[in-house]
Length: 446
Image (cartoon, rainbow, N blue to C red; front, side, top):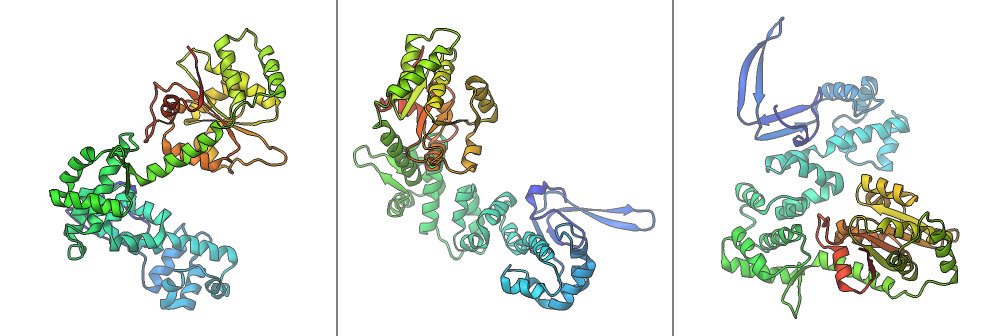
């Protein structure tokens, strides 16, 4: 088979059974001792893989396949003798009852290895079904890895759910028309209309928007549904299903997920913005100490920026390259450190995080790593925390939503960056909107 490895359900191994259909080239190959007929499939139409069903083939496969670590042919044969035709049924579910039965033959480590190895193969029937229905292998793997067998059952009932896994509406439409779904789903089926609307909304979100208008959505919907009545019906069904919220004053369409994230972020920032006049005598002394450590005199605008950071629970330091943002941030963080704050400084990329570390002298990490770590919570040993987000112009709403859910409401935040440069890849310009709202303390350096 001439095909990319990520497009097949599992990597080929001796003992597996494969069924391949599609255009093929047949050639006679002389191996020396005998002549072999070689079938080559270039971009096969359908690929299926299954485990051997009969005893001897299955025993040899498990004994040699590296996925079944620590189980040789001897143990595999003993398993077949014990389980027989129930072999596949027993290994479908890792339960205490099943483990008790297997413990007669295997150690606990070998039992774990057996289930771990079998896990890779038990979903093959689902992969084969999805391959037959032209669902890309990359989507198959994501479905089974993150959502399990229930997701496949749900897709069998409603294939338009594949929109949520990155499949195009047009491709799903073709899938439905050419397969077993044809008699179940008709053109005006609510599932189809809802999917068309979701796909159209997603296209707007991919442009960076967190809301849109009917004028923007209608052409996309008409292209997908090819019927004005179906387009109108899709809008009604979408409203009923709360796929979007219609703003009563502006008439704008707000996708529910994006609106929820915006609301959570706005609520947190509003809470922090209400905490002002925090520059007490202790903070002033810490600032004076940090300022005196500088090898040069700080400019007046920079001094205002440092004081603003210390005086507010959330603040911004903005400006172009070379305007002194690093000086302000380094001075503010030294002061925060002196009054007992734990500093968490992050940037989107590893390279940006490294540059930030070199600039401020504090430990830094990527946002992804921070989100993998334990949430930031105050403790008896470390009651005060500060989050610094560098190059904040690149932060979109989904990322900011995850950040505010990862930190305690008492954690202070400093944004730094240039709102006129490096827009985010995802939807929502967090820093630009914060600055333009004038609701959060911001010092623009020039």
